[in-house]
Amino acid sequence: MEEIVFLVIIGAGVILCLLRMVKGPTAPDRAVAVDTASTVTTALLVFLGYTFKRSIYLDVSLVYAVLTFIGAVAIARYLERGI
Amino acid sequence: MMLFQFLLILIMLIGAIAVCVFRTLINAVVAMALVSLIASILFYYLQAPDVAMAEASVGAALTTAIFVIAIRKTKKRDDKG
Image (cartoon, rainbow over all chains, first blue to last red; front, side):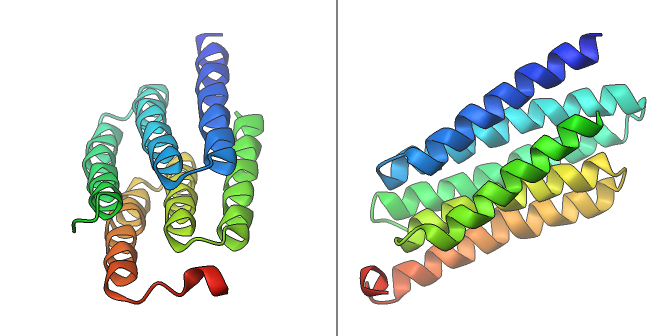
């Protein structure tokens, strides 16, 4: 039961991020939408590791969070004319 | 659980269509980051966490950063097709 509730909430969050990514008039809107989606799906990875009863799966979510941060930083540096 | 996988695949499909439709290169790169993100989640769902980790490192970080650097270092001709 708790699994269904969690998946519905995560699905709603990812769909809202997708809508902003498709609609968003400027590039920063889209970048923030994808960054938010990566944060939401990190929570999904942690919950799936709990569901599968494997503690090694939590390491994947750590690597995931760090690496999506690098991608977000690269896009942000581009948007402020840096890099 | 199965329905959620279908939802993820649908989101990935919409992101892939958005990559083809967007006219600005940086928007297409952002949409490609979303597609890679969802692909990593699907690998994780299919109980291949090492493949998911490799996909996250290559797709989300390395490819996005290299594409952004390449867009920065080339001329702005992206709006003329």
